[in-house]
Length: 316
Length: 316
Image (cartoon, each protein chain N blue to C red):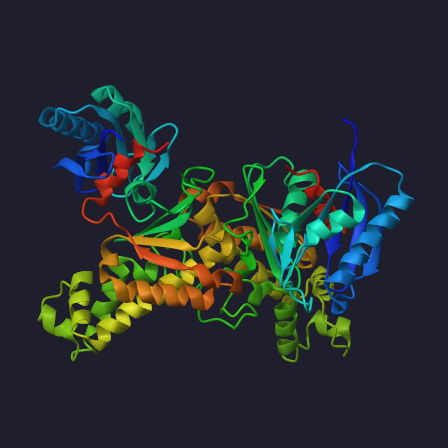
């Protein structure tokens, strides 16, 4: 098969990452520009267009399309983005139309969590899988649902909010306004907050030793401590995995989909996390679902955002 | 449009209810036979066939098909029923083939909760609705998912287990093996168990007065007490509704479907139940979903099982 090229745009609150990506998922060239979201939508659109122009100049290949993975509510058919968090002044922006007009190339806009799921389906861990649940563990917890090789969007394109499945209706308040969402247990910021709060009681832990008085705890530090067999790190990872598993058990019972793919920074905890997610799903799902549960790590890691967005141009 | 007729078979653990149903949802004729499930699958199949024969004799109309709503895991394409609870000795029964062979009529077999959803879509509250979540509140809590006028079955035909969405991962043990499932709060048996346990502390309540020493508390008794404005009855209904709402908020966040239809015996609590379900969904779902939430009572009430099953023959 002849390789084709698309441009993937990963629109973040701080940076816009763009790349020319081959139809087999390899990045040919990539750049990053500051989003400067405060300067408003017109400026951000200009940044995207100038990024695309730069990539086109550097790479003399035919670009079949541009895919944009964006935060916020996306109306996929219209290519509009509504109220992305951390983008002041955006109410509804016709991002697809504006970028397409500025570049002369077809543009597909998709929610960033859905783009990650499509990326895994086309290039990654979901290549051979008919249906799967994609979970992206980052600052928040995003999700995408692939059913029979199609992204499931729901009525307004907002489906897949796995981070906001409630596992404890009396639990901690979530940024979304609800309580006890999966995100309040395994979202980066909540997880780190908990570790910070409890660390003074765990001065014997390797985590305490690694950060050495510095308060910047990160999933990476926890992983490192885990490598040393640190009890507290094991506890943190297993608890986070179990609770994600409880939430995913509800998803499996509801959707009868047995394949789970997990990506994002916190997925860096690796095997111990996946093992505890899997065992807690199996413990909690109904009997017919127990035997086929599969929990895998996403294959797109660095540049997952660019690749997922680029995949949109290859997805029909 | 010319009216057609099908036969709906509602296969229950105690009785088999059968009816000749018109394509507009009216029942022309119905009968009930004991299931005698203990006598094994062959006997039950014979009962179904003899019921169909009886209805055919009584009703000289052309029957376009037979629909069977069955408990257990159903492989819809093959018409097989696996391990229905309360049916000893059934492992896998080719119910569709056997009934079709015995009656000479095409047979469609579906999970009873899915049949209820299809019934509401074809004759009932979901007639004008593209996508909705059907919840059946009975001894257990069943569910069916209609997406774009199609039942969503999942990988093995077992999707829609709304009763087994976890709302509290540390909650009470559920019959399914998990903890804190929606069913452990609003399933008939758990609900009644709770009322029984707490009634001695609520001797001032109308419920206590109505049952008058007799221990047979039922949703009907609670409804009756509610009519009198009884505080305890209000509490029970509002709490059950809220918790169902918390579970459904997870479903809405995941599926981006705003229409909920609730049927089954416990739905007899009526408006106060629906109001609390709705307000708790709206309280808990993410912002984009808040404005369109609709919670309605199922339209098929008596004979919902027969009608839902009969609808299977009209569903493509």
